[in-house]
Length: 52
Image 1 (cartoon, helix red, strand yellow):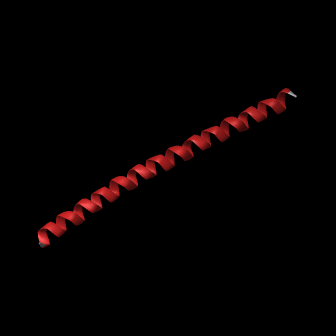
Image 2: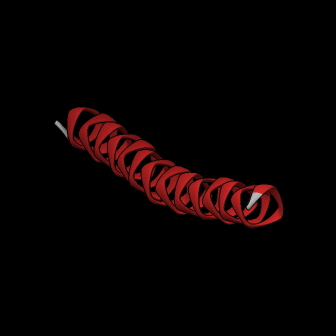
Image 3: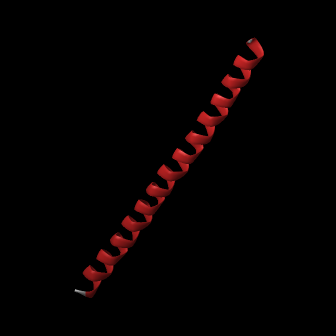
């Protein structure tokens, strides 16, 4: 019974680690995307100012 409990705890820890990594990846990806969109928008605004 002790071995079964030990394996269960091991799988739960692995699951939690992967879940934390997934959430961190989503948050970082969203942050990077927002930064990229802001940079592209600033470049578009700058090019529109030059054309006017």
